[in-house]
Length: 360
Ligand SMILES: *[C@@H]1O[C@H](CO)[C@@H](O)[C@H](O)[C@H]1NC(C)=O
Ligand SMILES: *[C@@H]1O[C@H](CO)[C@@H](O)[C@H](O)[C@H]1NC(C)=O
Ligand SMILES: *[C@@H]1O[C@H](CO)[C@@H](O)[C@H](O)[C@H]1NC(C)=O
Ligand SMILES: *[C@@H]1O[C@H](CO)[C@@H](O)[C@H](O)[C@H]1NC(C)=O
Ligand SMILES: *[C@@H]1O[C@H](CO)[C@@H](O)[C@H](O)[C@H]1NC(C)=O
Ligand SMILES: *[C@@H]1O[C@H](CO)[C@@H](O)[C@H](O)[C@H]1NC(C)=O
Ligand SMILES: *[C@@H]1O[C@H](CO)[C@@H](O)[C@H](O)[C@H]1NC(C)=O
Ligand SMILES: *[C@@H]1O[C@H](CO)[C@@H](O)[C@H](O)[C@H]1NC(C)=O
Image 1: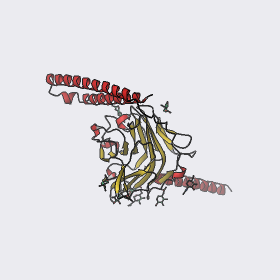
Image 2: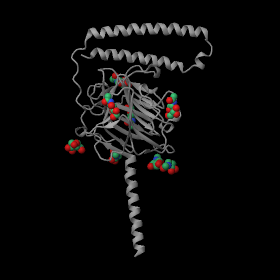
Image 3: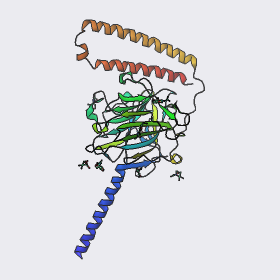
Image 4: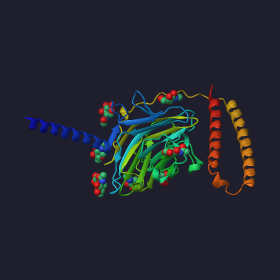
């Protein structure tokens, strides 16, 4: 009797353990979120990220210079020894800017070995890195960024979609657009229109191409990717990687939303069911006409200030350079960052002036 009991108990435990590992195994290989409704979401959120009652994943609201993350709870298991690294993912996102047509800042689909982003910065670092971590091979980060503010520091020309390896300087990037299968040409997409945009990332371990494709949700997946770049992920990914999203705001800010997301390691990511995706909050009514007089005045003031600041900085730098020319760069390298920050502050001032001009 006791033996029977113990045997059946043993069987039950075995059954439980195998069922559990089966569930986890499935989770590690793929998942689909048609909105983020379920009780058990298996998502870890931090920063200002939250799930809205209607199942919308809001990575950031309009709080300025903040970050938000949402990562899948279970790490994805790759095998870098035998190069088992293929994956496919599909998600629908939307960005709603605080100030029309002004970026604030952006978001990134991310593979990361860790989900602790305590030291990561907002603004141009999109909640992924800081100055000292940016670009380090030890990061093991692959990010597909949707960046609405170009940074000359990172070689950006315009708002863009980029493939980033270990840092914010893109391996390849392009302005958002899609190849229209019907018309046979590229059509540009406004990242900050506030409309949902469908995005696909596909990687095949044999060809080693990272393909990024996007289109408005009214358009089926385009036949040609926007970006198709050779990246050897066996040099970047580790055997256990977290997958998710990072977003950051600057001044001004933007809402960053994910409406749905699917991921698959063993085939193409499942298409999302658009009719069950959560809807976006009603966008506030656009102001009819910004007050041109105020804007012109504020822009003139900003211009004068920028010119004066620039001239002063130029004179000061020239003096400094004359006095201590040698070793200055090497010894006080970080000063370069200050100049960038000054530029960033001037941009923020300028942007705020415009925003103020728009208030009735
Ligand atoms: C954004 O969300 C955070 C966290 O939920 C909250 O503390 C903050 O007040 C919100 N900001 C705005 C502008 O709504
Ligand atoms: C690589 O290893 C994984 C297990 O980690 C296995 O599932 C996969 O089939 C292997 N691939 C090849 C090409 O051997
Ligand atoms: C990865 O693949 C190698 C070679 O196929 C195999 O020996 C190893 O066990 C695999 N690792 C895991 C974690 O499955
Ligand atoms: C950057 O982040 C790392 C951890 O990711 C932290 O150890 C380091 O202190 C941070 N550096 C700065 C300048 O904040
Ligand atoms: C469309 O854009 C892609 C990616 O930038 C580019 O490679 C391609 O040449 C463009 N095609 C046409 C027809 O303009
Ligand atoms: C990536 O795009 C290239 C060029 O269109 C295509 O040949 C390749 O099959 C695509 N790979 C995947 C995994 O979608
Ligand atoms: C992943 O792709 C395989 C092959 O197409 C399919 O059988 C499986 O259902 C997909 N899994 C998920 C979670 O999408
Ligand atoms: C898509 O979602 C709608 C509404 O939730 C549902 O009625 C429909 O059956 C779903 N379609 C598929 C293919 O799952």
